[in-house]
Image (tube, rainbow, N blue to C red; front, side, top):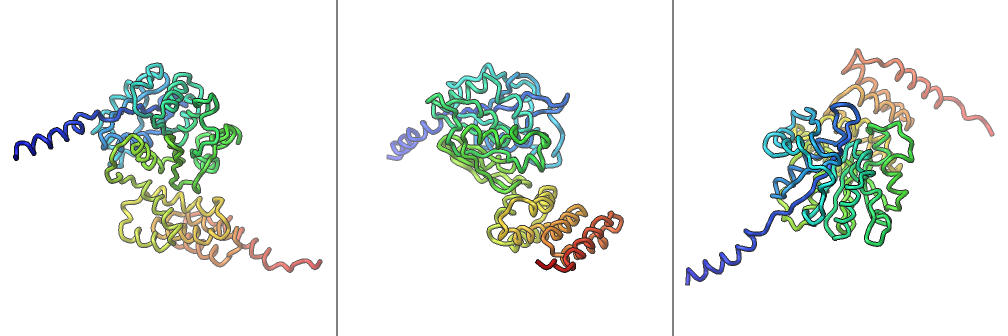
Length: 376
């Protein structure tokens, strides 16, 4: 009886044990905007790679030209970047990426395209990449792209011969993010990825700048920015039939996810989390949000909450430029009392930081508000 039960269990386990791991093509840009500088975003690749690797997915790395790609040392202070470089075969594959000519739809269960400013240059016009992405989409296999990597889909056609993106819900690096952080911040508006996606008939969606957002339309998954990469990769893996494990901790992702949560629940959530565990969050991303968030295109009724978040971040991650940004924000809102309060904090915390221009702006704003309104 016991032997029969064991045999039955073994027979049930055999299909599971023998099931091949999903095989995924990950495509990165071959572009080098400057000698020795990669056109793909290494941090985006690391997040996607680690997420796939930890779920047993077989990753094969491609670039249009193939061959060795440069690897920078930025963010080496983070544990996840060290693990990516030292505990996975990623660097070996980056030293010998497979060329786009070898991309074959029948060999892969899905494809994921990594972003970076170079991805918007060489991926959209690469015939091999376009052919492969189209074949994967027409076969109903999962297709994912993150940040600028979504540019690879611009000229891909669907089964009906129409642009794959026409009428599809997608996201990608936004025009606002391009203005704030893009390497091509000075480019013409019509050349920016959001604009080009809309021109292809895509139903473009986005979150406020720097916050996580993933769009899914059937088997197509696209992500807005670097802090959305793990979210998109996890959606992609679900389409591959992978059972998800707990998400990995990336400090920048955690920071912007916390900000997004606080936008819905109030600054008290942010205050509590930073008081409990500030070390789990990324100071640079937090300060960037405090600096640029209040000037983003939020509805007027949301601005007080955004301002409250920025001021909470400034108290936990003090920096004179963040204080200066809050002075400017309160001047735009004609709240001279709060503008003066943050200027006083600059004088107290950073006495050598130049304040003359801010003081003059506050004086002029005060004079303008005090001036009598002309009679009509």
